[in-house]
Image (cartoon, rainbow over all chains, first blue to last red; front, side, top):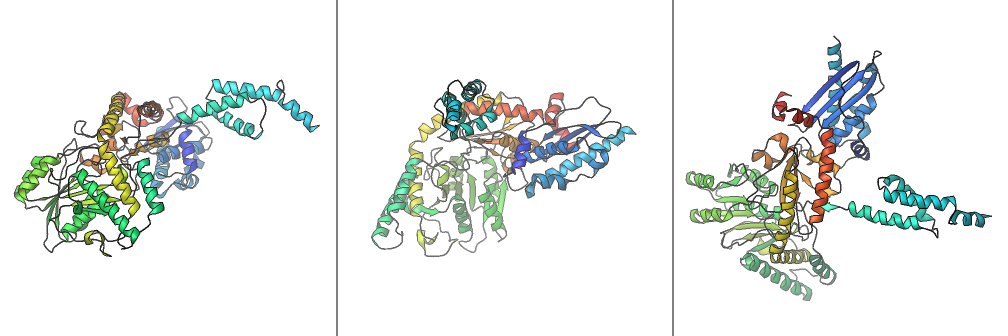
Length: 125
Length: 465
């Protein structure tokens, strides 16, 4: 598969991967299945002002899936939850310039984000 | 003023030269400072200083670096590097003899003689007759010609029999034929990838079948089928046997007459020959109709001007591959034994297909909780092939692995290593070191690896989500 240079750069330089164990409020979400070939896991920590302090991902999948989840964590950190809710797959798609068959990778990244935020609110209640 | 400045700059005790010298040594000692060194080298190459000890050390380092980062080709099942002896002959004919095979002038007749000689050579090597060989553009076209040509040779509707792990060029032509009213029966392969002969016998008893298509050596899992037994059954029941030998040629001994084969197809670019040429062997008694109409070349079965240089390349490639079959297999067996021994030691790995009835050229292996395509991206300088969906243009994972019962999450992890005569044990050692490193990195960021370590089975997980 022929990828854009940005995808390969993001695939090779992984920054925010791992697990979070401590924090004020932690939200986790897992999307996808090994049968489809892509699984994404995202964890975020917010402080009392609803600003995302930390974001860690773990991805099993092709190069574009790893790159898009890596890019997602890059965008998220330092933003409020209101700002983050507006992020859609188109933003990731435009930056990475993924080929047509790989659009589902960017959609998966959006789904993970929504699921983690849902999880956060669920915990708060 | 300028002169003095430059003199000072390059004098042995100036700051500039000292810096250069020490930089060179430090980078020679610590090769991890790659990036910094590249920038440094660009600057130093433009200005030639008299004291260039660091540059020489840099060159040594660069030489070492390039040698380690060389490209390795482990994808010989898809296509192979052309042999130099083949290329030499092809160049000679492209330069000097540019005539047409079917024209009656001096050069044309010369080429006619040469091509006839090649046909005789191939027929002797494969044990058949000269007039039974038809040159095509490749094995795909040859398979199409064999199946469609036989199906449409007369108006009678026919019954065909194949297996579900056949090559696409056979399966898709059968799909096309089915829409014209012919019947095709698909049998299931065993779990190790081998065809069960008893299943064929049972099928033949109930239904009158006209032709059986069989892939001698599978392209994805490298399993060898028992063609000798199937050939005997076909001869006793008067059934035609069509065999796709693209992967078998040059890797196992082939005898067309002894095995009772009626159709045999192969191509040149799998045996270190040129791309875009293949041939179909057809028994003389069988009548088939042509797919391409035109000037009536190749006994009116495949019209179109014969590509002289490619046919010469094909002939030479077949001759070399069959003559050196023992020597090459011995070498490749050594490499594949070394690879399998070391790859199995890695945690959570599994080899797909049977290990017994297999050519040594092929290793199909799946590494747990790492996607095949991402692994290929990680080891960019080694060319491999993957069964995962991400690698191909379609979104479906490999149908061969699916049909022999490999679970779908394992198919996404699979990787095919196919060896050739130009590979060496040094490359295999380098490959194993590299794959261990990249597996560690990818498993670090994989959520499935955490589950595997915590004892959660991935099978259950795939059902839940």
